[in-house]
Figure 1: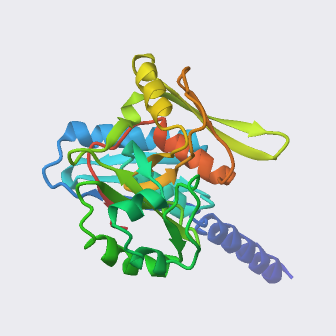
Figure 2: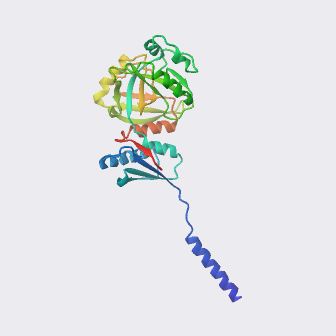
Figure 3: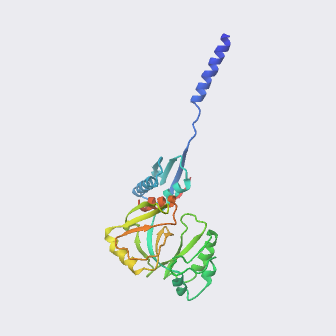
Length: 286
């Protein structure tokens, strides 16, 4: 009996020891990003880490750590129980260049093309109306076919074309951004004072609101006044985020964009827009 009791005690002790050495599951997810510029300064690397940290906070990612690895020009982002790693990677690597452009509608583009109807034939839609800022829409697979045509259309001095392909939609639309003397940016992210999210109780939708800095409010008023009936596009790293048609002069510098966004998308735009542009570009390496 004594031998049995001693054996049981030994088994219990072994179990306790084994339990003490059991490896707990690691719920952390790590994103390692590398600067695409081998000559990045340490100041820019630190500034990038600060911007990424602020983006994560703005987006409401609760548990994370951002660590600079100076010797390799890398930044490591560690997240605990992150639900959407794709969003986290985008927050860490999106350059964040916000620009505003005046646009041509479909009729304006056809005038530039001198009546050439090939462009319309590349889309599976009818010709848009004058109040529509889109030139045409297609599936993501159709982008390359349209790009091949517009890149050889000879309109480089008048406009550049951009897609609204920032969020991986199943249907993407083409926009024509106006250029004057090769330049077309009328305002940019540095001209914006603040971004915020507001909720439309009637429509149960989140709206995007942003306000321009006091110094450019008269500029924005003039831009909207001369574009009544036309669209102004906000472009993020070459992708059109929205392009609403202007119906009135906006004199106060405060703008509201309603509809067309999910809550996650509005949060993402606010997180990127509120925290500035990364000083260099990054790519995910792990």
